[in-house]
Length: 166
Image (cartoon, rainbow, N blue to C red; front, side, top):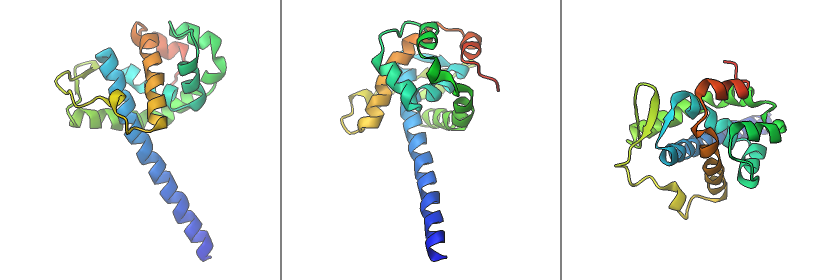
Protein backbone atom coordinates (compact mmCIF):
# COMPACT_ATOMS: atom_id res chain seq x y z
CA UNK A 1 0.00 0.00 0.00
CA UNK A 2 2.80 2.40 0.80
CA UNK A 3 4.19 1.97 -2.71
CA UNK A 4 0.82 2.83 -4.22
CA UNK A 5 0.37 6.01 -2.20
CA UNK A 6 3.96 7.05 -2.86
CA UNK A 7 3.34 6.49 -6.57
CA UNK A 8 0.24 8.68 -6.42
CA UNK A 9 2.17 11.37 -4.59
CA UNK A 10 4.85 11.28 -7.29
CA UNK A 11 2.18 11.53 -10.00
CA UNK A 12 0.47 14.45 -8.25
CA UNK A 13 3.81 16.21 -7.83
CA UNK A 14 4.57 15.62 -11.51
CA UNK A 15 1.20 17.07 -12.57
CA UNK A 16 1.70 20.14 -10.38
CA UNK A 17 5.26 20.64 -11.63
CA UNK A 18 4.10 20.24 -15.23
CA UNK A 19 1.34 22.81 -14.71
CA UNK A 20 3.78 25.21 -13.08
CA UNK A 21 6.25 24.86 -15.91
CA UNK A 22 3.51 25.35 -18.47
CA UNK A 23 2.31 28.53 -16.77
CA UNK A 24 5.85 29.88 -16.49
CA UNK A 25 6.56 29.04 -20.14
CA UNK A 26 3.13 30.37 -21.16
CA UNK A 27 3.97 33.69 -19.54
CA UNK A 28 7.24 33.87 -21.47
CA UNK A 29 5.57 32.81 -24.74
CA UNK A 30 2.64 35.20 -24.61
CA UNK A 31 4.85 38.02 -23.36
CA UNK A 32 7.29 37.45 -26.21
CA UNK A 33 4.46 37.35 -28.76
CA UNK A 34 3.14 40.65 -27.34
CA UNK A 35 6.62 42.14 -27.52
CA UNK A 36 7.09 41.14 -31.17
CA UNK A 37 3.64 42.28 -32.29
CA UNK A 38 3.38 45.24 -29.86
CA UNK A 39 -0.33 44.55 -29.41
CA UNK A 40 -2.49 41.45 -29.64
CA UNK A 41 -6.23 40.97 -29.41
CA UNK A 42 -7.55 38.94 -26.50
CA UNK A 43 -8.86 36.17 -28.81
CA UNK A 44 -5.51 35.84 -30.60
CA UNK A 45 -3.66 35.72 -27.29
CA UNK A 46 -5.68 32.62 -26.45
CA UNK A 47 -4.56 30.68 -29.55
CA UNK A 48 -0.80 31.10 -29.08
CA UNK A 49 -0.35 28.21 -26.64
CA UNK A 50 -2.19 25.54 -28.67
CA UNK A 51 0.28 26.27 -31.47
CA UNK A 52 3.54 26.40 -29.52
CA UNK A 53 2.85 23.87 -26.73
CA UNK A 54 2.03 21.14 -29.27
CA UNK A 55 5.45 19.73 -30.12
CA UNK A 56 4.64 18.64 -33.68
CA UNK A 57 3.07 22.01 -34.53
CA UNK A 58 5.91 23.94 -32.91
CA UNK A 59 8.47 21.97 -34.93
CA UNK A 60 6.58 22.69 -38.13
CA UNK A 61 6.44 26.40 -37.29
CA UNK A 62 10.20 26.44 -36.78
CA UNK A 63 11.09 24.25 -39.71
CA UNK A 64 8.96 25.03 -42.72
CA UNK A 65 9.24 27.82 -45.20
CA UNK A 66 5.54 28.51 -45.81
CA UNK A 67 4.84 30.74 -42.84
CA UNK A 68 3.34 33.62 -44.75
CA UNK A 69 -0.26 33.03 -43.74
CA UNK A 70 -2.46 30.92 -41.54
CA UNK A 71 -4.15 29.57 -44.67
CA UNK A 72 -0.86 28.24 -46.04
CA UNK A 73 0.07 26.70 -42.72
CA UNK A 74 -3.30 24.95 -42.43
CA UNK A 75 -3.15 23.61 -46.00
CA UNK A 76 0.35 22.21 -45.54
CA UNK A 77 -0.04 20.93 -41.99
CA UNK A 78 -3.56 19.60 -41.52
CA UNK A 79 -2.26 16.86 -39.22
CA UNK A 80 -1.12 19.51 -36.73
CA UNK A 81 -4.63 20.89 -36.40
CA UNK A 82 -6.62 17.70 -35.85
CA UNK A 83 -7.16 18.33 -32.11
CA UNK A 84 -6.61 22.09 -32.08
CA UNK A 85 -9.97 22.84 -30.43
CA UNK A 86 -9.21 20.45 -27.56
CA UNK A 87 -5.77 22.02 -27.08
CA UNK A 88 -7.39 25.46 -27.18
CA UNK A 89 -9.82 24.52 -24.40
CA UNK A 90 -7.09 22.77 -22.36
CA UNK A 91 -4.73 25.76 -22.52
CA UNK A 92 -7.35 28.49 -22.10
CA UNK A 93 -6.97 28.77 -18.29
CA UNK A 94 -3.18 28.70 -18.61
CA UNK A 95 -3.29 31.51 -21.19
CA UNK A 96 -5.58 33.62 -18.99
CA UNK A 97 -3.27 33.09 -16.00
CA UNK A 98 -0.20 33.96 -18.08
CA UNK A 99 -1.75 37.19 -19.37
CA UNK A 100 -2.84 38.10 -15.84
CA UNK A 101 0.70 37.54 -14.55
CA UNK A 102 2.16 39.64 -17.39
CA UNK A 103 -0.25 42.42 -16.50
CA UNK A 104 0.55 42.21 -12.79
CA UNK A 105 4.28 42.40 -13.60
CA UNK A 106 3.68 45.49 -15.76
CA UNK A 107 4.89 43.79 -18.94
CA UNK A 108 1.53 44.19 -20.68
CA UNK A 109 -1.45 46.44 -20.18
CA UNK A 110 -5.05 45.85 -21.13
CA UNK A 111 -6.99 48.04 -23.50
CA UNK A 112 -10.64 47.50 -24.34
CA UNK A 113 -9.98 44.72 -26.86
CA UNK A 114 -6.23 44.13 -26.74
CA UNK A 115 -3.21 43.17 -24.72
CA UNK A 116 -0.54 45.80 -25.34
CA UNK A 117 3.16 45.32 -24.67
CA UNK A 118 4.46 47.95 -22.28
CA UNK A 119 7.47 49.41 -24.16
CA UNK A 120 8.80 50.95 -20.96
CA UNK A 121 9.40 47.43 -19.61
CA UNK A 122 12.86 46.94 -21.02
CA UNK A 123 13.63 44.12 -18.59
CA UNK A 124 11.46 41.63 -20.51
CA UNK A 125 13.88 40.24 -23.08
CA UNK A 126 13.54 36.45 -23.02
CA UNK A 127 15.04 36.15 -26.50
CA UNK A 128 18.45 37.36 -25.33
CA UNK A 129 18.64 35.33 -22.13
CA UNK A 130 21.21 32.55 -22.23
CA UNK A 131 19.65 30.75 -19.28
CA UNK A 132 16.24 29.91 -20.71
CA UNK A 133 16.91 26.34 -21.71
CA UNK A 134 16.40 24.45 -24.94
CA UNK A 135 12.62 24.06 -24.73
CA UNK A 136 11.97 27.74 -24.04
CA UNK A 137 14.39 28.78 -26.78
CA UNK A 138 12.58 26.48 -29.23
CA UNK A 139 9.23 27.93 -28.16
CA UNK A 140 10.50 31.46 -28.84
CA UNK A 141 11.54 30.39 -32.35
CA UNK A 142 8.05 29.03 -32.93
CA UNK A 143 6.55 32.31 -31.79
CA UNK A 144 8.77 34.24 -34.19
CA UNK A 145 7.18 32.22 -37.01
CA UNK A 146 3.66 32.53 -35.58
CA UNK A 147 3.57 36.33 -35.29
CA UNK A 148 3.61 37.10 -39.03
CA UNK A 149 1.13 34.27 -39.69
CA UNK A 150 -1.48 35.72 -37.35
CA UNK A 151 -0.70 39.44 -37.52
CA UNK A 152 -3.15 40.40 -40.27
CA UNK A 153 -5.62 37.60 -39.58
CA UNK A 154 -9.00 38.73 -38.24
CA UNK A 155 -9.93 37.07 -34.95
CA UNK A 156 -13.19 35.57 -36.22
CA UNK A 157 -11.44 34.27 -39.33
CA UNK A 158 -8.64 32.60 -37.37
CA UNK A 159 -11.14 30.90 -35.05
CA UNK A 160 -13.21 29.73 -38.02
CA UNK A 161 -10.17 28.37 -39.90
CA UNK A 162 -8.86 26.62 -36.80
CA UNK A 163 -12.37 25.21 -36.11
CA UNK A 164 -12.45 26.55 -32.58
CA UNK A 165 -15.79 25.93 -30.90
CA UNK A 166 -16.13 27.26 -27.40
